[in-house]
Image (cartoon, rainbow, N blue to C red; front, side, top):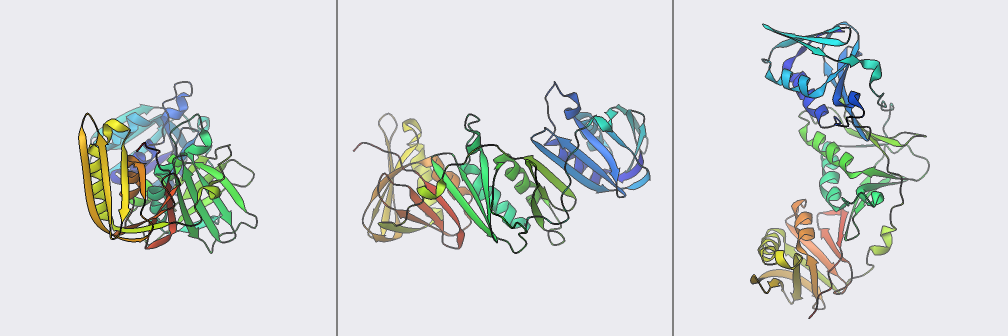
Length: 374
């Protein structure tokens, strides 16, 4: 392999790929980047076997080839070079890096030893703009579980039915649902798969980092007869394994009707929740929300710390109600909400509470209340 490439382009590609490098000592090749020429470009790949990424970078290719080189060494080396042209020259299992007066030789491995990553099909199952993918990541992923003992809950359920995709996450205490319409859905049969939430988080991060957001769309492809899915952006392909597990029947959790409806200013609500959470830290983060005509009260009480109560204006309908929550769950939900107001639908103190964005009917969030004495 012999190519010429711009330092800033290579550095950016290596930076993206570095997030997917594995530190598993039993498989040394996974601590490497794979550099290979393809279609007149340099493709930088990395994988930890669960997640993988390939980033294509424009380059002047004089000689084709492929080589695996230590990721940390190459990342730091390229980052330290001047913003100018870099020559990459393969010498058996070593890579010569030349830039101006700087010359380095990095020992590597044969490219054939690197795991082969899947390539995206000509047409993705679902295509959407960058913002939609970022929204899915920010509105859904925080609800997934971190408990590896329940692998199904660490993933995002992707349900495909006709022209609608449904993305669902839950950790057993909260539930997030996002629906996306897609004219480009090419699945003839209904599909239901579980994708690790980290894959969506990384996909959302890559989407937010894209600068030319008008030239491409983000794609999600389900690999037929396999256990992988692909996110693609033209020059970036992110691959992920599918989780083998059974997702809980989340539809049964969604309340059919509410006895109390509340609409409140998001900023005021967020501020009051934050104040109450200061006094709830020593009592399992429990806060109470009490509804009344034209207002709601948010309070927290811990004997060894003290108490706090905030009263804010709200549009209320139906019965007065009092319900308790883990404040962290509400805080994380509000952190990803872009609307000026938030709506709550309450059935009772022990029933799931529905949170809605009045400007986005495709998004639904549910939080289980906490049973408290008194």
